[in-house]
Image (cartoon, rainbow, N blue to C red; front, side):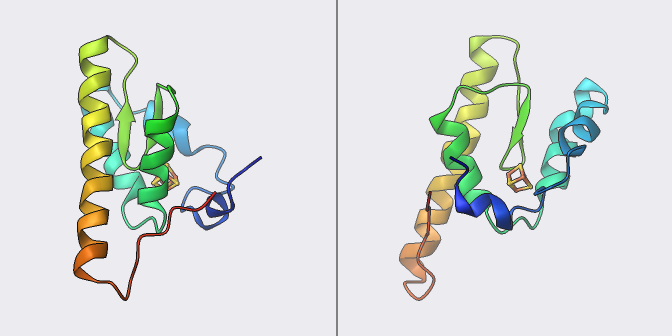
Length: 103
Ligand code: SF4
Protein backbone atom coordinates (compact mmCIF):
# COMPACT_ATOMS: atom_id res chain seq x y z
CA UNK A 1 0.00 0.00 0.00
CA UNK A 2 1.34 3.41 -1.00
CA UNK A 3 1.19 6.00 1.79
CA UNK A 4 -1.10 8.95 1.02
CA UNK A 5 1.68 11.48 1.55
CA UNK A 6 3.37 10.20 -1.61
CA UNK A 7 0.72 12.11 -3.60
CA UNK A 8 2.05 15.39 -2.20
CA UNK A 9 5.70 14.57 -2.88
CA UNK A 10 7.65 16.91 -5.12
CA UNK A 11 8.87 13.84 -7.02
CA UNK A 12 5.40 12.28 -7.35
CA UNK A 13 4.89 10.90 -10.82
CA UNK A 14 8.40 11.93 -11.87
CA UNK A 15 9.79 8.60 -13.00
CA UNK A 16 13.16 10.10 -13.92
CA UNK A 17 13.71 11.66 -10.49
CA UNK A 18 16.27 9.12 -9.24
CA UNK A 19 17.93 8.81 -12.63
CA UNK A 20 18.67 12.52 -12.72
CA UNK A 21 20.41 12.32 -9.35
CA UNK A 22 22.20 9.10 -10.32
CA UNK A 23 23.50 10.75 -13.48
CA UNK A 24 25.50 13.27 -11.46
CA UNK A 25 29.13 12.47 -10.61
CA UNK A 26 29.62 10.61 -7.32
CA UNK A 27 31.15 13.55 -5.50
CA UNK A 28 28.23 15.82 -6.43
CA UNK A 29 25.40 13.37 -5.95
CA UNK A 30 24.66 14.31 -2.37
CA UNK A 31 24.32 17.99 -3.31
CA UNK A 32 22.14 17.01 -6.27
CA UNK A 33 19.85 15.01 -3.98
CA UNK A 34 19.56 17.93 -1.56
CA UNK A 35 18.69 20.29 -4.42
CA UNK A 36 16.20 17.86 -5.97
CA UNK A 37 14.24 17.58 -2.72
CA UNK A 38 14.44 21.24 -1.66
CA UNK A 39 11.01 22.52 -0.82
CA UNK A 40 9.32 19.12 -0.82
CA UNK A 41 6.31 19.35 1.53
CA UNK A 42 6.73 15.78 2.77
CA UNK A 43 10.44 15.80 3.52
CA UNK A 44 9.93 14.57 7.08
CA UNK A 45 7.65 11.73 6.06
CA UNK A 46 10.20 10.74 3.44
CA UNK A 47 12.98 10.76 6.05
CA UNK A 48 10.91 8.48 8.29
CA UNK A 49 10.35 6.13 5.38
CA UNK A 50 14.08 6.14 4.68
CA UNK A 51 14.73 5.10 8.27
CA UNK A 52 12.06 2.40 8.24
CA UNK A 53 13.45 0.69 5.16
CA UNK A 54 16.90 -0.49 4.23
CA UNK A 55 16.77 1.01 0.75
CA UNK A 56 19.99 2.29 -0.72
CA UNK A 57 21.12 3.97 -3.93
CA UNK A 58 17.99 6.11 -3.65
CA UNK A 59 17.08 9.59 -2.51
CA UNK A 60 15.15 10.04 0.70
CA UNK A 61 14.50 13.48 2.16
CA UNK A 62 17.29 15.08 0.19
CA UNK A 63 19.82 12.49 1.30
CA UNK A 64 21.46 10.22 -1.22
CA UNK A 65 21.53 6.86 0.57
CA UNK A 66 24.81 5.36 -0.49
CA UNK A 67 25.34 1.69 -1.07
CA UNK A 68 29.00 1.44 -0.30
CA UNK A 69 29.69 0.28 3.21
CA UNK A 70 28.15 0.19 6.63
CA UNK A 71 29.94 3.36 7.71
CA UNK A 72 28.49 5.53 4.95
CA UNK A 73 25.05 4.00 5.39
CA UNK A 74 25.18 4.79 9.10
CA UNK A 75 26.19 8.39 8.34
CA UNK A 76 23.34 8.72 5.87
CA UNK A 77 20.86 7.37 8.40
CA UNK A 78 22.14 9.90 10.94
CA UNK A 79 21.24 12.63 8.45
CA UNK A 80 17.71 11.27 8.22
CA UNK A 81 17.45 11.11 12.01
CA UNK A 82 18.57 14.75 12.20
CA UNK A 83 15.88 15.78 9.69
CA UNK A 84 13.17 14.04 11.73
CA UNK A 85 14.50 15.45 15.01
CA UNK A 86 14.55 18.95 13.55
CA UNK A 87 10.95 18.61 12.35
CA UNK A 88 9.86 17.39 15.78
CA UNK A 89 11.63 20.30 17.45
CA UNK A 90 9.82 22.72 15.12
CA UNK A 91 6.51 21.02 15.94
CA UNK A 92 7.17 21.62 19.65
CA UNK A 93 7.97 25.27 18.92
CA UNK A 94 4.92 25.62 16.66
CA UNK A 95 2.07 23.58 18.17
CA UNK A 96 -0.21 25.16 15.57
CA UNK A 97 1.74 23.22 12.93
CA UNK A 98 2.07 19.71 14.34
CA UNK A 99 4.26 17.11 12.71
CA UNK A 100 2.15 14.78 10.65
CA UNK A 101 3.63 11.52 9.61
CA UNK A 102 0.74 9.61 8.17
CA UNK A 103 0.64 6.37 6.28
S1 SF4 B 1 11.88 14.48 -0.07
FE1 SF4 B 1 11.31 12.38 -0.68
S2 SF4 B 1 9.24 12.61 -1.45
FE2 SF4 B 1 10.16 14.63 -1.47
S3 SF4 B 1 11.07 14.94 -3.48
FE3 SF4 B 1 12.65 14.08 -2.16
S4 SF4 B 1 12.55 11.88 -2.45
FE4 SF4 B 1 10.65 12.75 -3.24
